[in-house]
Length: 458
Image 1 (tube, rainbow, N blue to C red):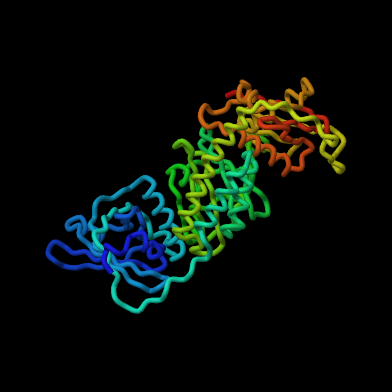
Image 2 (image 1 turned 45 degrees about the vertical axis):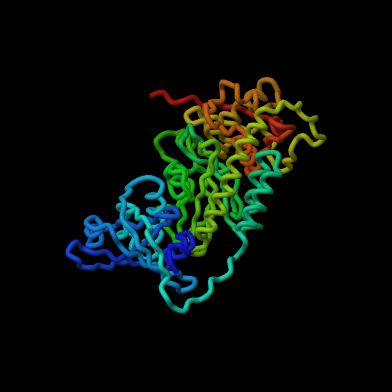
């Protein structure tokens, strides 16, 4: 079979790292050399990238003579394919480099070579010709599911949603029912804090809503920073996350209250991870993250399908947030049971503490939220305490000088969802209820005692 009838993207199952690939090069004096590669990465229809890990004979050969031959093996069928390739350049940073670095970390951990396998660069090769070698091969196994049908079903479910809350839940429900992905979460990007925060999750004992990932941290943070999907098929400890609340420092009496972390909800030992950033108008909106306990659970087709879903999700989030913020519907009438039932709650007041240092908020001694969501909560409970006000709108929050929203992509609706879900998760006797498009009501079951802790003077 020649390169005219076989396209490079048809060979993507050969690039998962299950069977090492071989690269044949030649020195200027004609001496041949063959080396095995940890990873071959699909770049586009005409290019692949190979790992540059050591300055060895292969490296010296391609720098002197860029012509080479690459042998790929399909682990599903046993077929072998020989590619004529030409070395073009080496990349040492950027999305491609970070994708390969993450995958190599997983492969290295799987092989017990974490201290040896270090990516120095991504060598880009142009594919000149493809030849399938003769032999008896197995038929390709049927796909586990129709990813095209799953993508369509997911996109249709998201498109039917009229608010952001519903769109987030619809996306995660579809991942489970249509893609058979049991563990997933959606994180939104906070441009002001250079971090991402979890707004929705599915498949975990605890939701992890409000947990944060710094830009560039782990597979989620790197995917967000580089604006590229990153997929790892083996356990990679350096791309995992801390799942425990940090020990409080004893630096001062207020230290235990100044900062807490909501535990990340992910699997304790994921063996397959895929993080897909979603954008709107070329700006990062958030990251769709899925994981599994099995190795090599997600393939290139899964990545492509979820990238399509993420694209739909990014634009839907942008449009739904804009619709909520622009709405000016009157608040609905209070329900008959407007106050949440808290039969086992203490009868005394709830002490609401706000720490101006990082806008963290505590209900009694329990951490609730921080950052912009903390500013929002403190503003509305302050209005409630002073004026007994309970009805609010997105529009007025956006104009409130007490709430320091980023100028671009403030994600106000997402922060309100985060706050609403944190209050529900804490089973607090304070709730936020939607009363119309872009409007919500504060429900308070116990008296509130507000304590504002100013920034420490330095």
